[in-house]
Image 1 (tube, rainbow, N blue to C red):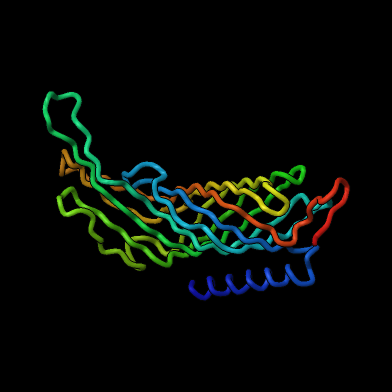
Image 2: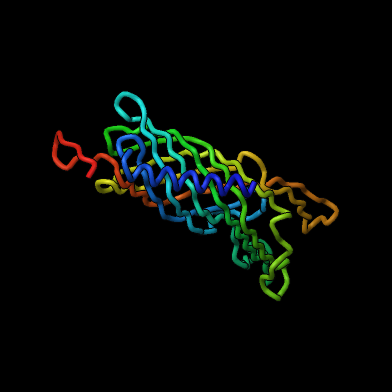
Length: 241
């Protein structure tokens, strides 16, 4: 699996180099940088509260009569996970000063991701696409407090357990041109297969244990610059300078 990831990185760098030197009409090179807002469905924590980096190069291969269709391949450094701060919630039903305690939690999952997508560009200002994303886990760190007064502490987490090394996601993607070759990119992705299976004990009824499968659930916001894309400097004229 490691060899596959290294080969994919080499292939993408090679295609990016070729796109910038001598084959600008066929292959476009791009780079993207932004942030992920993620959560892990099935971990009993809610909200897109974990922020992380999303950065990397890509190649874009236009096709079709008007070059409105394209295939995009990327290599991304991507940080996902889940987060919940320690919280207290006053009991509004009972007339007491007791509080309900919510555990703090933090999960960091770092991936090298390879998305492959098909896009359609409309009126040269907006593009939409769908595709699949393969992610290779390169680091996993997890902190929990287990409802005590010691604060968050790191749990036993490594690349062999409990999270799977590979993640396959489906993607929906929208790009909006901001200025010339600079695009704003909104992306939503979701794991097809579970990244972990975990048992949760009911705090009220300890004998009850629920097994949940967990999935990455991700919103990505970023900027994309396409180096050798054709743009309209004047009405009716295109250039690749």
